[in-house]
Image 1 (spheres, rainbow, N blue to C red):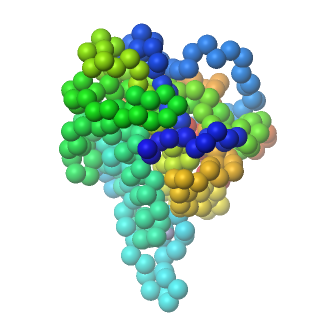
Image 2: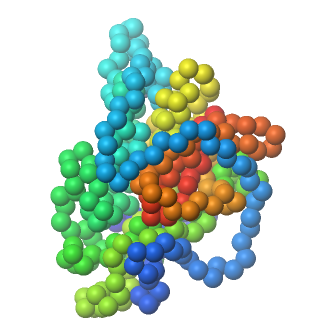
Image 3: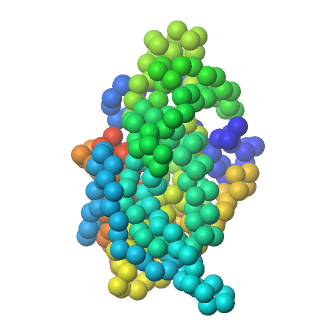
Length: 323
Ligand SMILES: [Zn+2]
């Protein structure tokens, strides 16, 4: 299936969390984390983010257009090789499937649009479909119409089962990452999540036992495409915010590259994307948040963006150095 990990090796791209004991399910309606009791772990010295401007997204989808950009935010082109103006499409800063309506006009060329929609579509389906349905998030075509989703009941590999949507156990799962190597002492090759932040929307052990299920797994997370998604949000918003002050964008190339599903993770794909462990964020009233600011580390200050999806459900902030 889509989310299966590749054969055992030094780097894993797909991650999921399996509940072998349903008594260990997080409490419905509460923020939790997993795995628990992991013992000692390494911490790394990390930078400090200073926010300068917050863009908040409410649970009710609101349409808002940012002024036209005029060339592609990813490849920088405004014209083709013959000098003809490229047709530039409007770009959603946070993908529309997450219920966000903020758009940057005239911002993406056809090739880059194709590349970004590829990872957005696969992340939407693999990671967020049941959550979108449970929260009734309004996407391009309104609320998701699909009426059932496969439930992964396997542990190491995938086994799928279908149960009625009304009883489908939906848990919002987001990875907590190590601080990125551009703003911490973390070695560039220490990839993979630290743990998972969870919000149990409706998974109920007693209900699942009625279907003779005694274990299931979270949605699978393709860490590479997830990192691309977070980097994309940060990059697009930064291009808009800093448009009058030029900087060298460092994550555009990563965002517009296709990393085929079967391929091993590219080296250093979490170079610019990570979490800060010292800067704790409480639950806020916003569904999502984007905050532009500076990341100070090692005597320098880089432009950076904090991206927090599902802030109102206690999910983690991701910090992206965009230069
Ligand atoms: Zn482009």
